Length: 308
Image 1 (spheres, rainbow, N blue to C red):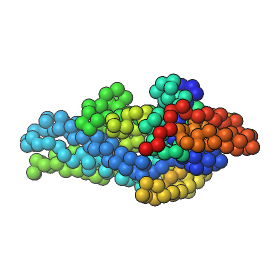
Image 2: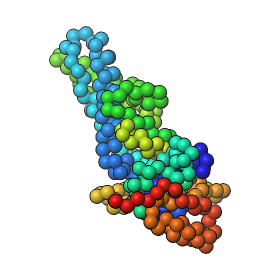
Image 3: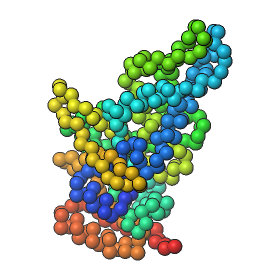
Image 4: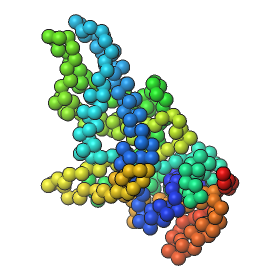
């Protein structure tokens, strides 16, 4: 395994479906394993916008100083229409942080799959190339790929994260106007709807690539795709097919993103996790790939299997 690989942890059953289809599943952003993830990112965005508004309103004459608390109006006015037009689907991977993790995986992530866990090993560059090519066969607003940034509630953004939130906060003036009669705030939603579309990258960056710091060990790399749901008479491309599966107590909408191109496959190997039947699973996978003439390397994690 090289430094350019990313892992997708899953069960043996799901791994076989992915391998046979040549496609990775990207789930609707509101129905990922962490059900509160979207709300956490939204709260962070609202906080940043409220703070920016507080700074700007200090210079408005005749306005009684008071905390600006309606950043949620701006965030929802932007994200809700976006979700209806181009729902965002996310495929999640883990980028191993050291040589041991690249060879054997991470114990905490194996625990989530009990004795049926495997990790699909992808070449990151080839994976990005293959998924991006799907824009040539279906309608997308865009497809993004980057590593997840982890933040604590109330933490001040730094580095690339600071740029994301700063750009999003630049939309604050769209939501602020001063009513001369009452010296209060008015929110012209019709103006918000015409906000520049070039902020789409920043919106997606905040809501798809920001997570709570408690998940930092996952070291996630993600691919986010905004699939356009409506047909267009002048578009030669069809809308992306949306499917559904039952998981974690909910029906989860998802789309399939290819990890193969005509030239190559981004899937390079499969790592079998700790299990009482680890060697049996590995040997059966090797036989299956031999029969199917698939050049997929099978290896076993040396992390011990412990029953409780």
